Length: 604
Image 1: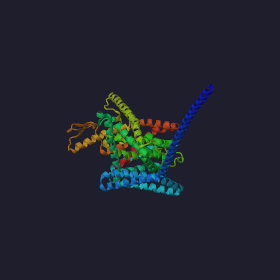
Image 2 (image 1 turned 60 degrees about the horizontal axis):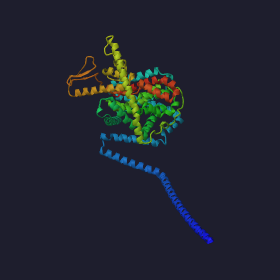
Image 3 (image 1 turned 90 degrees about the horizontal axis):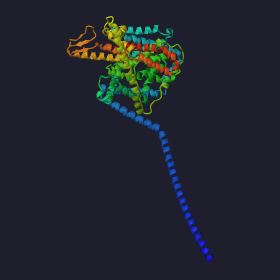
Image 4 (image 1 turned 135 degrees about the vertical axis):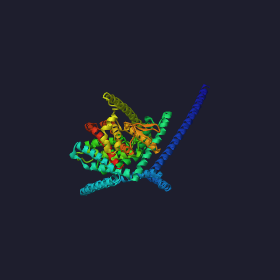
């Protein structure tokens, strides 16, 4: 009995163990089956992703192969659409001034595209190599070029100046005086190379003749001036938003901040798109080819027309360590002989003529090269380490158009803050100097003894040699003195006041009022019918334009500090040369502007 019970118990335990083992085996089998299914699904997903990735790679590769074709096709379609629009606009408005701007923009775009296309073939370098292999041809052609320059100058002087307005020949005395002074004070007169000097002057003369006497070129500069005026008007919208009800048309700060921010933002976009660099390349190669100056000098001179002294220096930064003493002096003189595009708008807000400001900036570039090479001639016979001007153009600094616009607008506040601080300090300092001079004068019974009064006599001969009317000589001399001892910004502000007075006087005369008169000291003009006094009088229209050319330049003691600081940071090992020539370059910058005024005075 006991044995039977034990046997039954063992059988029951065996059955239960078998059932448990079977259940565990089934459970393990189910788990393995689910794992295998999951692995299969994962494998299938991986295969799908791999196939999609391979398909994407093939699509990108196919697009990459035909991207150039698609891009060229897109550009071709855009070009065809633009030409269609351009042709239709000319058809609708043929002979009207409304299409002048469109023609100028199209010409500039065509020139930029042409320059990019020709950069592959580099015709200027090939032509230079050709001339290098034929020195006899160079000698004979140089004589022919010099003779042609002399003939063109003499013929145009007779036909455009002597026979039309011989009194303008007084400006020749200023040209001769400036060149004579720099020849006598040259560091090495026996080393002077007359090619860059004479060709630079001739190029400046041709610019003046074309801008002031050729109707088409004149209209182009007038249109460019109108564009700058339009940008000034656009900037006022930002000023009204920024200052609200505080915004006025008279406050200097209300014009400065919005205008500088807007103009620099636009210039940054043009730089990013390559338009600005293409223009610099064209002007730089042109100046180098015409004047014989090195690519570094000519490119820097052209960059100063559009950029500030610091930005134009950055264009040639990698090559500063290679320049000679003469070239370093020329670079500093370039920076002080013109004004940048972002500041021209500020002068226009004072009422200064926009087209003459633009013309003065362009004409002063070859003038600075000519006078600088006369003041500090090149002594070495080194071959220029830069064979291609394009190599000096820096890479783009911005990642997109929006980045360029935003970065330009933000960076403008540094310039605006610098201008505000300097102008505030300079005007206050000038008032302190005048108060001191008045006090010293009153001690010896001299009335109105001021810095302006001293300058009106000190620079009077220079003012007359520029070609201004003798009756305006003292007022122009006063402005020249302010430019030399203070800065051109204060001088242009005062010139703007003279211009407003002249416009009021002309309006008074146009109403057939003849009872106006000068004060006893010939300082103020009284308009009795309107009960208005024109403080300090006004300049004639001709004297006003000549003065506009004479004041166009950054040469002042503040700029000396800025430029000297830049060079000491970029080329610290050349600090001895910088200290030696920085003040001479300031004088060259002043005289380059005066030379521009003299040449412009011939045709006004």
